[in-house]
Length: 400
Image (tube, rainbow, N blue to C red; front, side, top):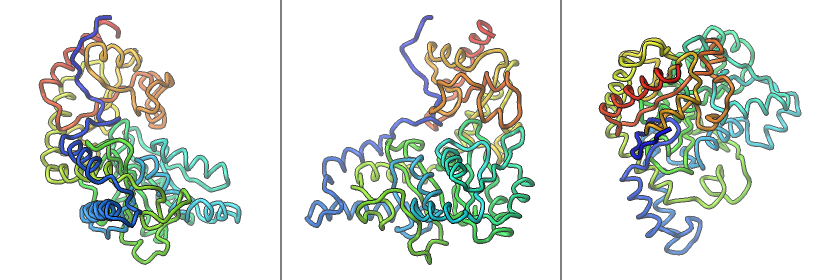
């Protein structure tokens, strides 16, 4: 198979390229702010001052105090910290499980493994986990959620934007249900795919915790954050810890703090927050251009309405299936032609089984076996979309 030298990157849901401003900040801080923020000398204080500025900047973005911003190693740790920390931390959670685990945990059947695997582990240890169904568009079944909330509930966690099909959940409706039926339950959202694509406002959404990842927004890999809402102002300790160690980051996340990558993350946030409406408009236009030109054999996955007016689909992601054309064939053939797309979450992209998200949506095995995902960045162009469509049509003619 003939390959091409140039590459068009349409797998931004897996990771994004590092923004120039984020790279500049990473280099600057790596050279000039190399001290350990826990050290008492001048270089240590300089690092701590920089870290404080980062906490304050992200706190301002979410309108929360600086000590409600906990920097982590990425989205997976942020989700794990939210769930285990919301249960009091590892030791208190184990005690809770041993004592009979009163109060159920709720999540959905289409969560990222960074959350789902935690709930599976807790279920194996005796916790009562309610797995909320989704419809054929990947949207939460709010009637099912309402029924489950009739049982005493301790913790609720959902995606904001589903990572494989782009379904954007109605988190405000979720929070209203949770608050009306189980006001003491903590509500966490995984906003890793929605942050900087659509507004993520804790107060407007009515949530308690939000997980973020830097490399999904043009920041560096290896850093993320967990944001705590206003409910945590009166809690002490605010949440429990995943790991034990020294009292960095308000005693919640021990370990030497990687100030340069955190500063780079915040630089990417500051770049994006001034352009969020502009970027969303661009992403929607790219998505609409692609969906209008897809081959006739293609079947869209996720919310059927792909117009810009539909608030139930994240702007940057489009998923489709070409029944009879396996995902791996499509991805490999397009890669050879210079276009990078995926067959779903990067952590499962080499798995030949039917896509689990589509399986949970009940759309059928053939469609689940042929699912692919295209995810845009504001840096992508309309010309790239047109070139992709031309090559996709060639692949369909050759293989389908």
